Image 1: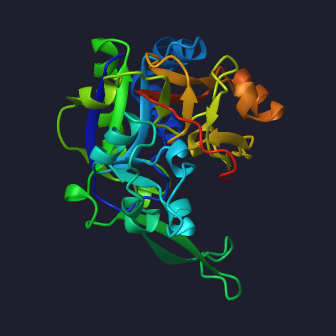
Image 2 (image 1 turned 45 degrees about the vertical axis):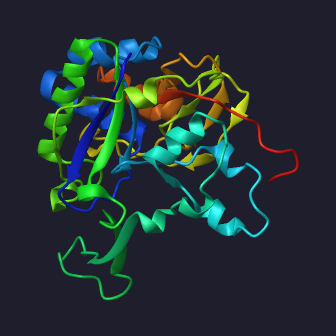
Amino acid sequence: MNLYRLQLRPRSPWRTPWQADTLAGALCSTAARVHGADFLRRRLIDPMLAGSPPFVLSDAFPADLLPVPIAVRLAQHPPDTDRKAIKRGRWLAREDFLALRATGEGDVPWNRLLPDSAVFHDETTRHNTLARDSDASLEEGGLFSRPDTLLRPDNNDRAALTLYFRAADEAAADLLLDLLHELSLVGFGADVATGRGQFDISADPQPAADLDAPPAAANGVIILSTFQPAPGDPADGLWEAFPKFGKLGPDLGLSDVRKHTLIMFRPGACFHADPARPFLGRALSMDDVLPAIAADELRRRGVEIIHPAFGLAVPAIIIQPVEGIP
C-alpha cells in the first residue's frame, strides 16, 4: 500500500474536524447514496470489518504541516523552554517532521512547534432558535452560538488541506477518488445545507515517497490519523487519547442519533512496531458503536453501519522519553 498525498481546497468554513474516521464514515455514506447498500457492504464494510480496508486515510492536515509526534513532545527540552508552549504545540513543518522521524528526537525545533491557534481561526456565529408553534424567534433563551473553523493563510500554502492515503490497489485508489469527488459536490460534516464544509480537490494525488521510505534503523511507526487500535495492535508506545461523542447522519431516521462515546487516539501517536506496517486500527461494528435499541432497529431495516477507525502509519525511529519527564 504505497503512500500518496492529495490536496483539498476548502471553499468555506467547516464545523466538523477533518478527522480520518469521520471522513471515512462520510465516504461510506456517500458510497451508499451513490452506489447503493450492496456496493457499500461488498466494497467497504466487509473488507474493513475483516481488517483489510481498501484504503486508509490520514486526517486532513493544514498545507505541508504534520502533527508533532508524541515522543518528541515528551523528549528532554532546554531548561529555558516554555513548557506550556511545548504542550500546546501540535504542528511541524514537513522538513522538521522528516528530520525528527529519522532520528527519534535529534535537534527538536522547539521554537517552531505551532499551536492550533497559529494554524486555524475560529469564528462564532450566533443563531436564533425558532418556536415550533409560531416559527418565530424565542424571546428567552433563543440565541445559541456555533463555531466555524477556517485556515489562517500565514502558515498555510494557498489555504490548502493535505490528505494522505494508502490504497490496496489501483481500483481502490480510483474508488477513493470517486467517493471524494461525490462528497465534494455535497460538502463535508455538519451544516452543509448552510454552506459549511465545501471543498474542491485541487489536483491528482502525488506519491509521498519521502514519508514512506523507512529511515535507517527504523523501529516503529508514527500514526497520522485519528484512530482506535485493534486488539492485536502493538501497545508499546506513546499516545494522546480523547473521548469522541459521535452522531449518526440524519438520513437514517432514528430519534436518537447518538453513538457510544469512543476513546480515540490523536495523530502523532508513536509505537514500537514493524516499520513496514501500513496501518493500525480497526473498524468498529454497529454493536460496538450504537445502543442495542438503535442497532436492532437498523438491522430490522437491513441497514448496517460501521465506524472506520484505521490509522495510517509511516515508518520512524521511536525513542522512549527521558525517565521522569511528564
